[in-house]
Image 1 (cartoon, one colour):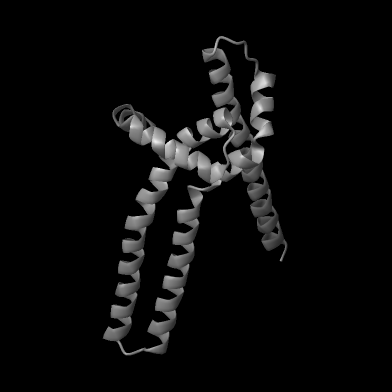
Image 2 (image 1 turned 180 degrees about the vertical axis):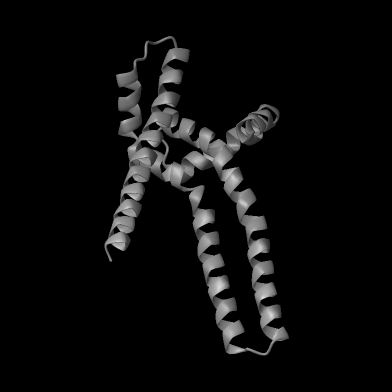
Length: 169
């Protein structure tokens, strides 16, 4: 029982540390975008000033950084349902070849699902930089920031593709 409690506490500690890092990195991304904009406009920027600007838009920045994770979470949930269903049906229909076919169909559907969700996640992750910038510079919310990021990417398609390839690498 004691090792299970220790493992559970370590998992909870890991989740807590991950959430703290997620919040701090979101604030830092927003502060960086705001600080760079201040400097480009000829003003002076400091770490504290940039951090404060990022902190002021915390909830929008958290939402922007969470959006790319939504397809991954949906995919993980659907794969768990798919695996559970295939195991359940293969156990229920223990007829040899049929159970193998059901497991194969579950694996095929999971792979097909990932072929849709992975590019969607990558696309949202790449648009996130434009969305953070729109959030910080224009004061937009989560979905409006992604909309503005999409328009900026489309209007500057050549440089955006280069930027996306660099970011992807």
